[in-house]
Length: 151
Image (cartoon, rainbow, N blue to C red):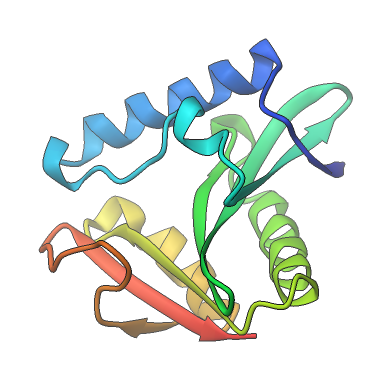
């Protein structure tokens, strides 16, 4: 398994992210889906990582710079057939280290409040994220949970 910065130009990552958007739209009301599409991830404020295993994308994650001290975790996903295999933990550990190395002091995230998102919330709790109020441009939403941690 290798974690690499991805320029989002390959068809494999485009397909992987398209599946992510489709899944989020199937689980969450449209007004509460905050997953970024490919074009929204291709901006200077975003650093995107793919998790590769034998030339196959098995996971991804990104950070979006909100201000010089604060970044947001975006696009965390593990391939369906690889869930509970340690990919998300390895990637989140990598992203936390890189975010700190980049000079950020805080990393926040938005995830779903439904039961299907409980494994994600448990992962974030395990890595020291605590629950917080909405941040950045988010509004309070019963379908969203907001979490943050200091780096």
